[in-house]
Image (cartoon, rainbow, N blue to C red; front, side, top):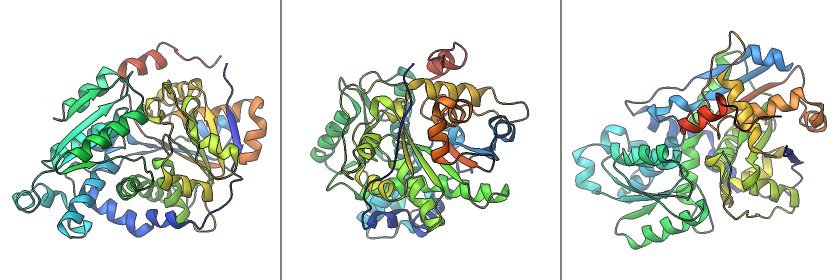
Length: 403
């Protein structure tokens, strides 16, 4: 069985300029925007007290994004807020004026017209962009990498987007979508991968993800937890991880919870960068085959990378069995705990936490992270069963078994 790999963050610190992207003020604007949607509701924070007791820690809290806007994943938070910011900028207005009612009005059509939003996706981000474009009367074009499953393709097509599965990996799809956007009148690339010269829209996307982190912080307070001791957050390009890390670093300045960044082993570009410890970005190429399709990204977001370098504690590279184990544990919880239907990219935190607490093979990492009976862990189940067939194969059929 493939081993979990890990490294402590010993990268040189930078001037931390990008932390301001996730300022509490920026996140509050994003949340106000999302709250203007009639479909908005705060997603549940599942308190798994039975699981915590079983694992020998104080608390386990899982933010369940399978309820987000009826889309079964968190990604729509980013794409929709980026669109609103783009339209606001084009009109010379502030994003606080971009409410759902205004964006769906005849007035907006007269003042702005219609843009075509291009994106590449493994599924959830593209569905979010397509849904937001559909709701706001805009157009969307979505490219998916080879190996993408039909259910995710169909969900995007249902939203009226033009969608294709390309014969290349995710990172190459990003390049193709960007080239198409540049050639299209009123074409806009909406991607959470940032690179030099393309940082404004990914920053807006990250701010949009901040809504989820801000809700979770409030829900923890209501549950009697002022500050979690640990945050486990997964990374593809790192936008979600950087958004969560950035929000909590701003919320608890000088006292940020110990943050563990987890990646799929087939696409562990952040782990490779942390292992090299020189602060430079590393790429992972090839087909990036993993069940964690949403994390199958080999080229890091430059904005996130800067935040993670300065504030994250550990980087962990997880084989597929870790995620599969987490899916089963969340899907069949300890009696009395709520069930969380968590997809392949959503459950890796549960699988990792359980493995660290249950297996002395990873005692060194458990002790390094400082997990003990006083630990309160926050994690994010970023998607539900977005690939229903694979979900059943893993949870019912025992695919990717732990032993």
